[in-house]
Structure formats: C-alpha cells, structure tokens
Image (tube, rainbow, N blue to C red; front, side, top):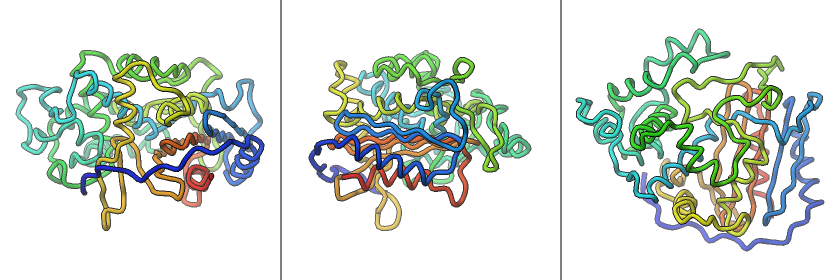
Length: 357
C-alpha cells in the first residue's frame, strides 16, 4: 500500500447526443436480468434515464423508487467524514477508541486505529466481527444483520484483536465503516441519521435518500435469484456501511455534486472542500500497487480519464455509482435481483462509465 499524490488528467467534456445516450442505455439494460432495472446517466448536466425489467411497472415510476444501496452507501459516509474534517470538528488522525470510549483499556492495535483507517479499509479489522456469524448464519438469506445492534458493533470493536497493524494492509471491512459511523455520532453528540441528513443529504437536496424504508409503495422490492420477493433489509448496527436507500434520480444528484461543471459549485466552503477531498487518491494496493483508492471510491484509469466508482448489493438488490471527474459523466444504476456468479449488472454499469466517449 502506498500513498498517491496525483491523478491522471481528465479528458474535456464533449457535446451530448441525448438520443444516442438513450439508445446506449436501452441496449445496456437489455443485458441485465432483473425484475426492475434503472440505468441513469448524466453527461455535462444532461440526464438520460432508462427503466425496464421483467416485472410489470408499479404505480410509482421505477426511477423514483427507493433502492437499497448496500455498500454503495459508503461514499455517503466518506463525504460526511470529509465535511466534518473540513469544519474542524474531527481529524482524520483522531483515534476511534478515544472518541468512543475514552480511558477504556483496549488492545494496543485498536488504540492506534484512526478515522482514516476505518474509512479506507486499512484498520486491520475483519470484514465483520467474529461473533457476527453464529447469529447470522441461520438467517443468512433473510435477515443476517437485524439482530446485531449498534451497541454490539461498538463492543466488538473495543475488544477486537486486529489481524494487521493499522495502516499496513487493505482489507474491505463493513465492520470498520460501521464503527466509523458510531464514532462520528459519539464525537459530535448527534445520531448518525441526523448527522448524515444535516451534513450531506439536506445540503445536496437528496430528499429521496433515506436510512429506513419509505412510505408504503415507494420502496423497490428485492428478489432472490429465483425471483422470490424479499422484505426490506434491516442492517442492524451496520448502518454507515450499507443502510441507505435512494432513488436513481437522487443518486445522479449525489454524483453530479462530485463532477466538476455538471452540478455547480456548492456555496458552503466545507462541502466544496469535502467533495474535492473524496476524489483525491490516497493509497495504492495490490500486486505492483495496481489498485488506486480515494477516501471512499475505487479509482481506475480509462482513455477518457480516471473513473471513480463503488458498487453495492443487499440480499435482493444491487446498486452502482460512478463518475469521471472533470468530464461531466456520471452513471447510477439499480437492479432488484440478488447478485449471482454470472450476473452482468456491475460489468454493464461499469462499461457505461468507462467506455462512453
């Protein structure tokens, strides 16, 4: 893992052909097998949305339903942390244990874990707490998280024995990002839901982005691979890592806020600083340091400039978010079928982001 100080130069924004974009999205949607599919693209601020799927559409348009984001919730958590840092309320190098339980004896490695480590998956923590699995396995396909509340996540962190020294290895961890959420709530004296709304959702006008199911009929229904409907996911104490629900239109708004020239500059200096900060590469990992990450996004090179993206999945839904900084291109995609080995959803959405001139 190494620090990254600069990114590839971005390509210039090109004129938008909305009819060609519509055709591109329609062809892409035909490659995705799910009851509900939404592919949404913003190019230079011009939006094109395609909806489809094998199920009959309901009374609420697919692009206005709330979809479970799963791990695609993490960029929202990262933007929140970056804004709190810009406001001087916390620092990236603040130690999580000191904020959660000051003075409580913890393992030395836990004591060294900072907010930056938690967000960038370099804390040394496992993907989920060790004691998560015994209670989750009997309900793995229906409700694995609901019986593991916030206080249990915090206790698991404070008694943890990290596998690696913080800051030395990258290991994707829902556990770590969930701890980050509880730590920020403790540090600010504000519940996570309120904090996220105040600092991210309200300032960006994300009225259709929620931390719990919306009014009846407004939430997309997830499905197993065989098409069986599933109830809404309860993420228990893992809220910051995967609890968000959002409409594809709101997701485009969120992405446009990250894309220079497509949404307009936020008037709040701390929000503008945070949006810039989360697009800055901060580490490389893997064989020959081939994988680049910002605070919250995966970053890949393309002929059109770097792309930043994050995917997510729940028991019966999938989401993909991505953008090309400086080019005016953003892609949001949702689908209501559980991911499987031959699934084309992520590859199709990623292709829209990386192959569109």
